[in-house]
Image (cartoon, rainbow, N blue to C red; front, side, top):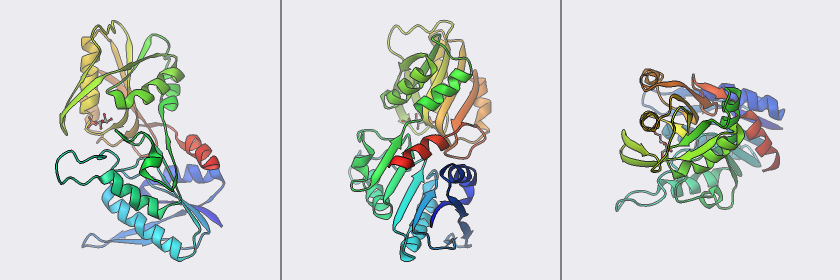
Length: 293
Ligand code: R5P
């Protein structure tokens, strides 16, 4: 029997995907011992299973995934699929300073060794442009949320007068996908990061945003520093209205006050990570991909 397996923090998305795919949903039960170790419990011995888990705040989640995948293989599972809408540790793809671990490569071997298929959304890839280079020998897909973010913008009234702004060249595909779906103008900035909480976003010389509505798009909003700086620079270039849509929201809701203080009307996110700002569904995108992968 084929089943879809969800984890407690991602029950909503797992439920939607299971019903879309026509698979029975089983939820993993987790127990955390006082010493920090995890007990993972799931009954059954499926022949094929799709495990759904976003890997934000990933360290414990990875170990639990390893335990679950290992147990399912022991019970005879022949095909294991991981749907990780947010995939961790993709940024560190080279040794920036001597001795640094290239986590992307190690993760590739780790997850590639556990799963037959891996599906993710907007993985944070820098120099590696293709997810198959991270998971050689594993069927994998990196889905873009751009068109979905753009469709959301369209529903909010986006037209050719709107500008879809991404912070840096890594956001280029997201910006163009969203701009096309929204029927809006695409604009890609140039980001300089000086530290985890110290970033600045620049715009091409001569950019004129006078009176424009700007929808800021990014793969992830984490501290929100990038978003706030982008709003500041867009305002300095003449923009008058600001919104934001992201594939992955991990910021604490207390940050909303800072976003509003920066003039950002609303921040919405896709639902790969459960978050109060979820407004854009990924179920159809992921289900369609699984049907052909
Ligand atoms: C960075 O390269 C990413 O695309 C995001 O722009 C960044 O991670 C957002 O982080 P924060 O919200 O902390 O500025």
